[in-house]
Structures are given as C-alpha cells and as structure tokens.
Image: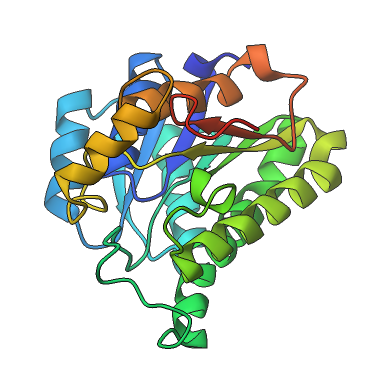
Length: 254
C-alpha cells in the first residue's frame, strides 16, 4: 500500500519529532491523526497548516487502553477507513538533561515504570486497537521509536534506555506474530535530536561534541528521522520486519 493510501496515527504528534513525522507523512499524501495529550493548541495549529481534509488532532493518553481505543475509533470515523500505520513516538515525562538524571543510587522502580508505560504499554495499546482492522486489510505498519543510547549508553538514562531496549523486544515479537497478516513492525532509533522540547535542556556543548565525533559531522534532526520512518511505511520496506534502524549520522554503527 502506497503511503498516500494510508491512514497514520502518530502518538505525541504535536511537537518535536512527532511533528516532523506528521509533516513528512502529510507531504507524501497520507491521512494523519495527530495524537496529543496536553498540547491541544499546537496540535490544532499543525492540523490547520496541513489542511483539515488530510489531518485531525485527537487527544488521548496513550497509557490508557480506553483513550487509545476511542482515538482509533474517532480517526476511523473521521477518514471513513481504518488506521493502517502507527508511529509510536510519544515520550512521557522525560527530558534529556544529563546533569539532572537519576543515578543507580537515587533512581526508583517507579521511574522505570513510568517509561515502560509510555513506551511498551502504549505500543501494546495502539497495536491492540488497530490489529483487527490490519488483519482484515492484510496490511499494517507498526513503527516504534527507539534510541541509539541502548546500543551505546554514553549517558546512562537508566529508565529511558531500558524501556527502549524492552520496546525493541516487543517490536520484534509483534513482527514474528503478525507477519503472516501482512503486518510489519520495525524500530527507528535516532540519536540526540537538534533541537526538540525533550532535548532543550541539553547544553550546546554536548551537541558540538556529537557533531565533532559523528562521521557525517552533523547533529541529526527530527526531519532526518522522519524520512527514515517513511521508509518503513513505504512499499520499499515490504520485505523488512523486526529491524532496528539507527539514524544518527553514523555515531553508533551496528
């Protein structure tokens, strides 16, 4: 199925990487559902910039099974056809601030649980909301957002890095179980992105270090990652599933 025929849910789609992903899919002609939790004004402005015939903003807490089901039902009614593609992007209660991170002495299980709910639980919720329609269509694209930090934890954000490693495990299990229905599941792992709300607390000196130590001599942008996500939604990736694509300018090679 071409991207222009797809209906895409982007969780956390009003800001940062999510916004870039929404814009990338809209550019290619897809119908997009901009999920947001609290950023209603930003989500609605993004929809207006795209066009209300091609996009809709829907509030939902991705950690809530009921909210997610409602979002998918509303999106299906709005566009008159089922969701084909999910980009699990939303980041819950986390900032990339190395100075303020909790170390192994101060971190608690509740910190891990928060990130697991925002990544693993949220992905399970969106998958379960879309699975029946995807199976009926014999087509589905599940794209999760990871991080190069669980490959190379240069900054040990313990709860965040661990939750993304677990999310890769879930992504691969989804790929195995649902491949027979034409559903693929892949992860795209960016590096520290320049510059989003989540990385706003990161000092400029850190970005300078990344730029100097990266083969492409540049810091990855949300737009760079968004275009890689398009690949996994496109017909070009039809034989690819269960993979983790690192998009960080070559900083981490795997």
